[in-house]
Image (cartoon, rainbow, N blue to C red; front, side):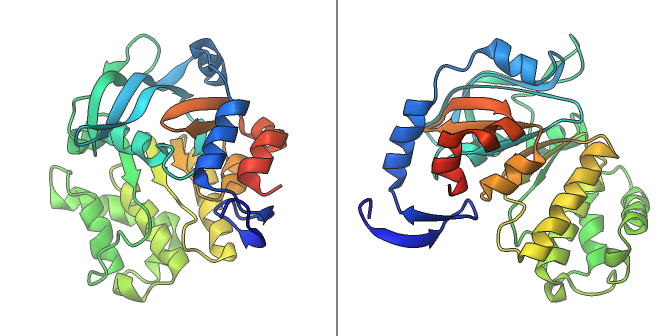
Length: 289
């Protein structure tokens, strides 16, 4: 496989002449990476981070996938995590939200010196008390429920059902495309509409931080642009902080303020998204050129 010459369209969305193995990508990415100083991460977060990971070690069962990850993102910033398959990108989102085991280290959220350690909170409490919402990969809607009912489900932690319905109406006001389909079952929606519903359902609880897992996966190009326009609006007009894993690395880095390259559960490279786009080594390994 590593020596096979052919045209290929990879997860990065571009095309390459030589297909190389994940092991080879890992080795080359490690070679171009280095020790990323915490001070550099803080500088990327304007020295005023809202969410911080400190020496986080996490994984599944007893298997450690993340080996001492540090992360810092300011309010209203966006971060895109890229790297080869198995690098630990989605594991970071899972660890933040409470979907896996954290062996050591911490997840903290808050402004200035008032950050709260939320590492051990349940996923429900992270949503309700810390304002963190997780937008899963495709096919997470309830297909037999209507669009309206799916949105109500997004407010399951509200104190009263009417509060979820009121929040859903605000979503419909914002997205007329969904409002026009409110009584339709989710299974009849297009791929782009389903993704809009997945994002909108997370908004019912009015979170401060959005964890977005592979927003473009399975979508046609016209819907990919629509989804990133929605995320841009949520960041820049509604003040959301966005942490994203994106298989289309070029699209993700074009969107994000900050980019991290992960390799084998460790941080290899960090920088502004536009600078990583211009990094020839990052381009060769992850952007198709």
